[in-house]
Length: 453
Image (cartoon, rainbow, N blue to C red; front, side):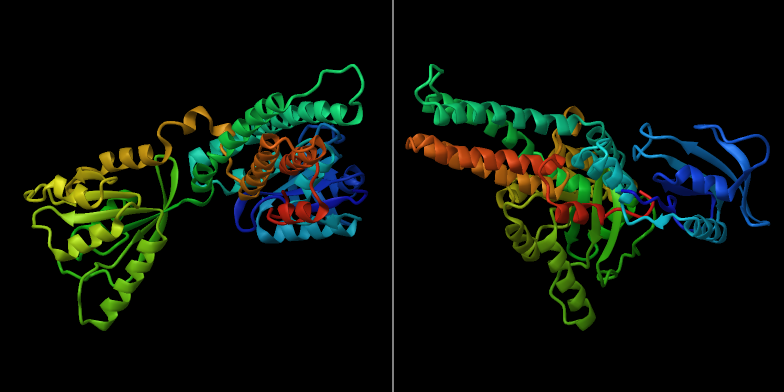
């Protein structure tokens, strides 16, 4: 924390602007040694035009600013130099800054300093990387709301409830003969159940959060020439997959990342599944089956202009209880498929009649997709969505400790035993916001960040 650190805060490559960020006690001195204003002096929090100069040689024409702590991102003095956005000017400017006494920042070290200096708690710091990595508007919105502290506040409220419980338990343990309110097991169970309800509410959002963070794996499955590649092209709104009327055109899986109604999706178009003697096609079919097994959602396409055959029956029975959308394609030609026959095999599936080549049914597919995974809840409680796998694991462990405490209340075990589990739950929740987290966890969290952030 005594070092002054520096790094390129923008992505390497060609661009209009590239930014060098400097933070620490020597930030102002280093800026004054490398930056020469075109006129006047540098005023705090005002961009100043000038040049980066190495002895008598001009390195780059820049805009620079100095900001004094604690009202900065890191709560330290921070200087930023806006160079031309190319590799050479950034490299030369950073090398000059480092030669004046700054140290190259580690990944995430600027945000780590913001955490250590109390500007952010740990869950807010982790929301910063979620903002950077967001691939959809909805993912970005969730991360932004977590950054403002709403999620942290919910954790703090639960911990405050646990503190109240711990105080009552401890007082009854340490001063049993004093004139104090005796805590009953029924009262203790009631209070712990309130805490469990709050924790369980957060845990229930973790699967939705995983989808927002990682994206949902969707596999388009079906026999050859039913319209799988046409559907992928329609969803992507580009000709990504080759479409012909020759069965077996797609020989391998094609994977693309996209967004459907703000939901990050990893979409896989697969080879048509059928019995074949073609060795290459067989390999593609095996990959299709692998994509089927690993998918979070199956979109199974049926040619509605033809009767369902044994291969369809086999696939439908294999889908069973899995999340699935059945798309009966080619409705513009004719429809001979009975919905009730399909529902017999996949009772939980949504069925759509579509003509993918004409764009019919795509909007309905997206509606069902959105409703299936969010049910309208995300817009109401985005800040309370647990998107971090570390947090989800800690919440589950904290919930388990509360379960253990409740079990001991049921059989009226000594309060000393119950106190241990309550205190452990309190500590686990503290790891989410960084109150009780170990150094190795901190280092692991911030190692995921990019340089300059």
